[in-house]
Length: 132
Length: 503
Image (cartoon, rainbow over all chains, first blue to last red):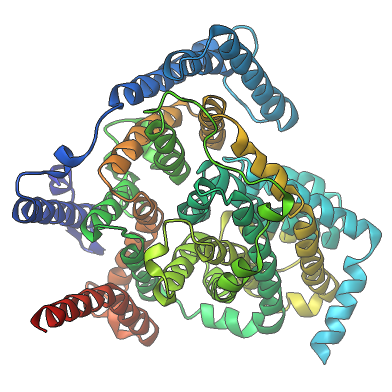
């Protein structure tokens, strides 16, 4: 909404670039306010956040961090190496399996993806210093 | 009688051995392209354009149209099995399709998707053959105010996608509408919410948001368990992996609903299969005897959007072949191909090139049968994917997601975005915000804003243009009915409860 204020609301030709974003912002704010009020009125003490179970959120965040590291490595290391690392990380750290099954899965999956998408379907994927 | 004679001539063309080969290659490549997220039919048709230029026009059109409708068959597979929608129209299939897979009914879901695609594809071709010229003329009466009303009707489907909280669904939809405003404003060339980032100037691609919130969000939400065992139950025996008689019976209305909605929305240039799939799902839920079960894995929740998605192909070919107006990226490439062969798409195309038009129509009947024969036996094979343990399947889903997103524009930025939307998808699941309205808002937001602004430019700021034209007024009344309907239903439930308490 703050950004939308800076753009013309109306122009000589009709609604300007600020017209839609401003109304969308107003609607989101109004709906969020209604949600808060309803929560305060109906739930005596329990907010939706408090009622939500967050057990295991640490593991979810770890998995997400692994994914983001994989994405960060895509250009310097290439898809095959970065996905191999992600698969090993997920299998070993998140699912607590041994190193060997993690390595077998990671290597076969990343090689399979490379053959299917890059070689057979000619899909362009980030390549590392080794050419894959 | 003339139509039947023309169709017979068309079959004579389509059954030519070489044309049968082109048809098979088209539907086969289309299915493969549809299964893999990110590789759209438009890109594949564009890649094959130089090859098609060397072919005769009829063979070329048969092959390229085969890719177009074949991709729609394949699009449901990853949506049902992995919750990975490869295109925006498949998002609706995820809602009940993936739930069916979770309930051990992946096979029937895939089977019903194939059958509804076949039924709707055939109905779409039938309608293309029978009503093409008058319907195309009707579609020309759609100006910006009518498009605004159509988009409003599409957005009103949020009521039917809402789940437990309508307010949360509306917030989700408005966030989608906001995402649609990101990028360069087409009317003023100004930047909106780009934060000086070059990659955001083109806006946010729906594939990125859909894969992030659906596929990666689902994977993250399931990382809370360390077991890593088999995710979902897959029943043994081919019989249990196919839809049963009850599934077909439950889907019979969905086949018709999806086919008609898909065709008529498809005729409108720019409307696309996404709005058709959302609207048909909404209608199906609205008329269902068990609307409360939608979202938990009901078979008609898969049949309706899949039928709409496939019937839309027949509809989209109407303005292309009769008026020379492409309604989507793929039909725009088909238009380029027609021009490349020296044809002039327009009202005289059917008259001037009957062999090409009727050959194409007949090949679409044959192509739909080929697709059913190709896809149904593969259902038990695809369903086995769910036998993989979670520690194998989840990394694979993440890999397919990264490849799918990267292959759209070959930008690393999209991979970062998909990670962000993945976390958002996880949070939305935890806080019970439905993700489908977000996609609905994102896909329709741009079209709706353009329609409103063009309408108000036409009327020089007079808002009455949005509701004063008859077609727009009818659709807006329908929109209001869809929005207000559940309130009456809730009031009735409350009234009955109050009456019972009084007794």
